[in-house]
Length: 163
Image 1 (tube, rainbow, N blue to C red):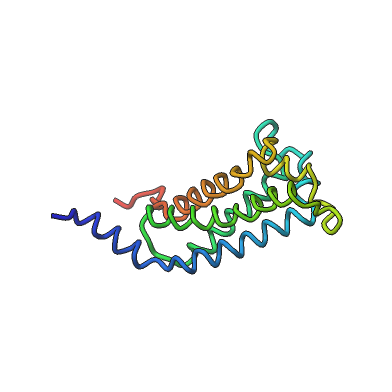
Image 2: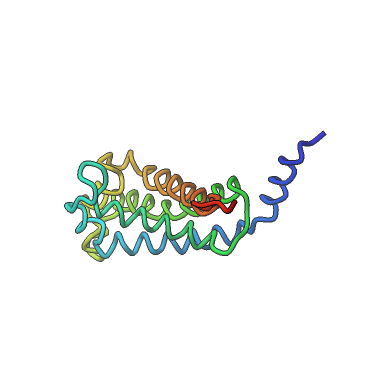
């Protein structure tokens, strides 16, 4: 016998429009790629948003993942698991674009066309790991997307009660 909660979650996951999630993730990836190639990531890197934790350059990438997850989940009614999965997928697809950029910068000299496709941008995107850290944007933005999905579906409780 199937547990009713499992059946409900399975029905919601099946009802989710995963093509829409992928399309929005692709759009977020284009935004992330644009932010990298115009130099916002590298130029903002020296400015600490929270000293020792995150810089403004890294925050620009985080915001791309948050934006993709938010647009994916906006106006949708779903449970926390489905929202986390959709946000994580949108974030991972968004993060794949900077990851491919890191690999492309190692193989091809993109600096002739894009001035900010530099080792500095690659260092910010991979947390200084180089080509071996090309997975970092994918995983980081998937986590950010899932967290956004969980936060958007959090139940709000009133701070006061009527007697």
